[in-house]
Length: 541
Image (cartoon, rainbow, N blue to C red):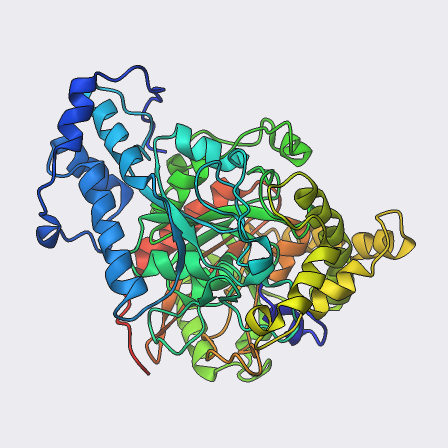
């Protein structure tokens, strides 16, 4: 959750490579790989490397998955644990190097599983991995929860040949614990920093994934979103984020908030890399019936929709309320940047239409929050009932937090958890009414698109990153645009738009259900026309 969405509204807010599954590996090759101990990482520079560039290096023999993985592990030690101390990685996978070595052996045998073969990936710490790592949603209450099996999307990730590097920190319980939370803080992981200006907030709840990708601690990462938790940290950390249509990626094995709105999604430095990751993790999951809606509507390779002319002939709705300086208390420089962006869109062949979307979406914030409380109680109790955590229910989490409040709640409390636990079951009239009102956002968006003959709706993803404030929590900086697509369960892509005072701002494209192909084409065209991504400088402030 991006908690600022609710504050603002006066309430709480594929590269086509064939897949080969590993067969028996000769012991001689295994031993050869294990004996390689040359420390040449000081001569390797992988900052801003893309998946294609790393694949080329591995294919030519210039680098191996082992050397690439070691480089990222070293960088995590240098940048995340020391130096700027971003604190974005909550746990390193002790099996990362062995996975990389096995992928190198398969490559030598001529077996390349996919375009992700040997590529290091970080995942958010609310996603099950059936290995030695814990899955805790950043909560000390869930410490020790080692999953019995991979989440569906992690199983797909392993099948693709990716190297699971570790897990990222997040806003505790995906920012669904307190109305006064500071995004990027968890009781288990502490506070994650924004790599551009270190005293600035990386936003939530996928704070660690956003910060880590931006700071080149991995090639790509997986985040999750209920409302803003992929696109907001992507925007303020200067990267690309894709929140897919709910049902495009499975949610089974992910600590939930809402089965109506939850989804995982790619976070990357380029639209191309995000599209590659999106491609490999789609699929029908028997344990997540919502994925049945994606049957016949997914694509094995979303990179085929990358198109430098993807804006030509497109009609884009621009959120009108973002064009008046100070309307939502946002920095007027964001308005200036947005207007410059609008001209770039026109120069690349798009027709712009001003639309009033948020005036119809903002009144739905209260029913959305009610829906989330009901579904969180239902979902977290179900997850805990079959998990390996010592805690078995939301009520037990609340009790644990009270007993351990000096460690768990030193800055903010747990009013959202308590309020959610007080809700009735899903047969409640209040829940059914809230669901109906909140999901009416689908009709609002579809009507806007149809009435104006639009291909997408666009605007500033959000305002500039706020300061880290553990005492008072997050504050609104204006221009938040995650709620419409989040409530509707529709796809949303954010791409770097520019910088203000050394802080990045993202630009959003969203549309109706399963419109990822068109959105990827437009986002890629915008990215290539602007190239606003910049490596962070770790400014002390």
